[in-house]
Image (cartoon, rainbow, N blue to C red; front, side):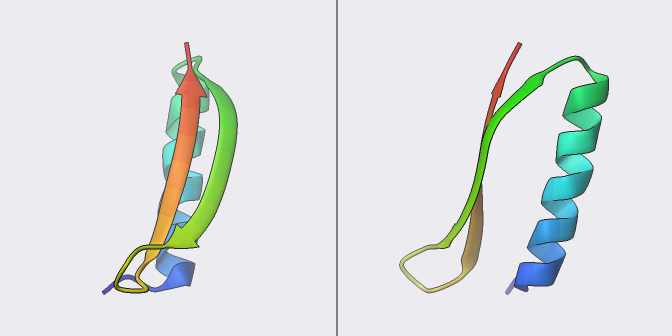
Length: 46
């Protein structure tokens, strides 16, 4: 299972890559799924 710290770090890395590719980060939200595993929802636009 993922930890929230690992998920946050992975999301930050992904966002940095997408910004360099000239995507706009619209929203980032964190939550849990049905099994209480941490999840991230990222909305990007070109």
